[in-house]
Image: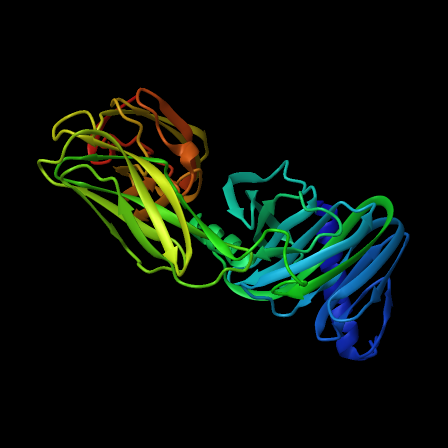
Length: 445
């Protein structure tokens, strides 16, 4: 995946669409081969082929089968799928492949405009992307990245848009596999990476840098005669593996439901192992997706550590996960004092950047934390990283991102990953003085 390829393919797709619309290029409905470039439908599937430099030919087989051969190409990408795509279970089998860089579920979203990859074979280029976490689906774990493309060609012309990238690449040649795309889309939504309206979606093969090679692959709705992952099932996992709650208060965690091998259905959640005085409730139950678990400790709840087990049941299929719970005494260290390091850099007459270090002065690791403050001079946050930000007037809240356990703040430790860009009036850009972590006032350095 290279920026030059992105520019080339989008320009080519825009020009190609215009030529077809004008009648300058015609694609026979039952065409069996495409050389160089082409889009259309074949045997009930959408197809797309783009190449620059060298030569490339796609042979369109029965149903979702396609074969591409290429030689000395600067870039080539092609495959079969759907237009529009959907949050569907996609089966595939790569019968043979050589000389490729990636084979992925590839597509576009609109409102907002997003380009996405779910990579099954090969390696994505992610050196300039931001790692956002990971998602487990269909028996393996993908690393999630996000990257902003600024003023680049797209399916909507030149635009600024996000790329959502789930990188795995460990599939084997010749096996039937499935991709439960809803798991990826739900995961992206949970990270604030909005999934809008579907455009096209293909099993895309990509190669570049003078490559020569070939692929023969088949994409299927639901499965290609079975999957290597076994029977339909599901897994559960918490967004935070440990939670602290103080007597007389509540704490929340998100239970993430991941479908496996085409599982579909509702799952009933239960919790067990709570110490005396602690109760559990679920925001959505039964659920077909994620559900918020609320743990409430009454004023006399037993303090100390325990293990909560969350179990999901759907018919005869069950799965479980655990959460380490700590109950703190009211007025103890569970609320935690904190120290904030607020550094402004760079700054000009109208814009500035800032980084914030958050030190946990308590004796327990903080997960699901929130830091609040009030600007005194009309400052406005325009973009941020490594935290979820909301601003209402002068009041700002930044919270740990759902599922990003690396943002937990250990006892005595400092989280330094958060920062933002903003605007100011060019007169005064004072450092806020009223920071509070989980409602507890902080010292400001």
